[in-house]
Amino acid sequence: MEVCVVVLAGGRGRRLGDVDKAAVTVGGSTLLARALAAAPTGARTLVVGPPRPGHDRATFVAEERTHGGPLSGLAAAVPQVDEPVLVLLAVDLPFAGSVVPLLLAALSDDVDAVVAVDPLGFRQPLCAAYRTAALRDGIAALGPPWGRSMRDLLAVMTVRDLPVADPRVLADVDTAVDLERIR
Image (cartoon, rainbow, N blue to C red):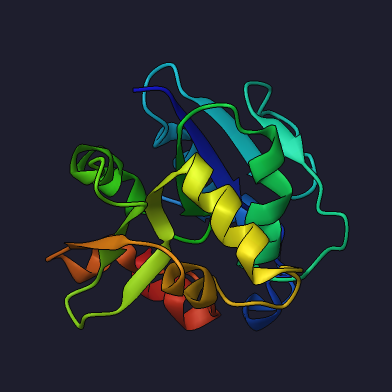
């Protein structure tokens, strides 16, 4: 299966004290390095956000208008994706990479996306496998993506939920308290 992994790494990190989340370390690796390591062997990787040294194998993509949220970042990357499947990961989900093989295995022809779901039933659209053509159609149907929610995108797609039993897998780093808990 031809796959492109898109890592969203363009946020401000305001709740974390205006820290570049991609540079934060967990378990001896930066969050960006952890996200890139989740890419299946041979998959091309795009990072939406400013270029960061030391990640030569990734292609960095700039948003036309920054800080428009995850959907806006995804919309900036999609035109550069030729592969039929796109795996989307947020840089602030340090353990989500373990789910990538399961997402890909669950992506069948009858769905547009497979989205990880935490034990409380929360869909995490930033840890998901999408059919690229369906993404293009969904983004076009929504209109300008800046400031729109990823949930708006899921609402116009056929989605399969992938339950994730371990709550740590989808734990994200939004605040200093989150970071300490995850470390």
